Length: 232
Ligand SMILES: Nc1ncnc2c1ncn2[C@@H]1O[C@H](COP(=O)(O)OP(=O)(O)OP(=O)(O)O)[C@@H](O)[C@H]1O
Ligand SMILES: [Mg+2]
Image 1 (cartoon, rainbow, N blue to C red):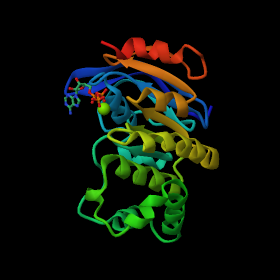
Image 2: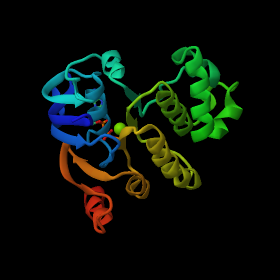
Image 3: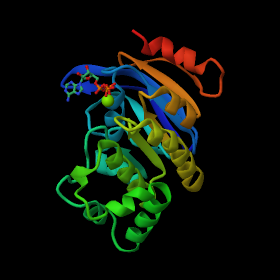
Image 4: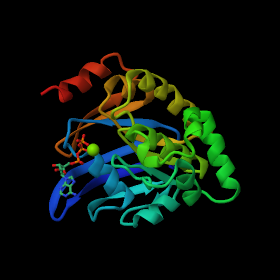
């Protein structure tokens, strides 16, 4: 199976277990939305999968390859792009310089083409300092860059955070279109429920580091089931 598999993964920080026995299975090209209230371990789950945290127990398999315990650059080499919640671009360099640092030679044209297709407004911003883009815009640039260098898996942490409703409405279509063009398997951490249900095939709710419930987004009661976990 060449999708993305997480098997009873537990991880956390300096001895504090945050993510507990999380299991997930994504088919190739599938989009999963992971939802949950603040502090429930969503970002920690992505960091653990990317190899930023000491693995405690469990296994991660990506594209049929063992990713458990690998450092982040080796996980990336399996074709994984990570769009972190915190700002990950060089804030004082321009948008173009940020792209050129990560993408060389002919890939740079591919990166520009992907930016033009997915997020055309960024083409007008190439000479602008990355730090002057909003957090959401920076994540869009990182997503386009990952796709341009051939990422087959994307882990995206709250791309809608701080974005205007009209931008969020368009973003769901852009992400589904990117998946259709590249066949990308995506794990989206989200707090925006309508966006998550519009873009993903399936959903899972994290509650205090554990998967509390999961299902398919096409089920008519999906929103109600997720909301039960998000309301206090
Ligand atoms: N570097 C760290 N060191 C110690 N504890 C941390 C660290 N980062 C996060 N935590 C703790 O881990 C728990 C989960 O945090 P995490 O950032 O994964 O939550 P989250 O679901 O992504 O929240 P949000 O929706 O606010 O982004 C929290 O209790 C948090 O305080
Ligand atoms: Mg988070």
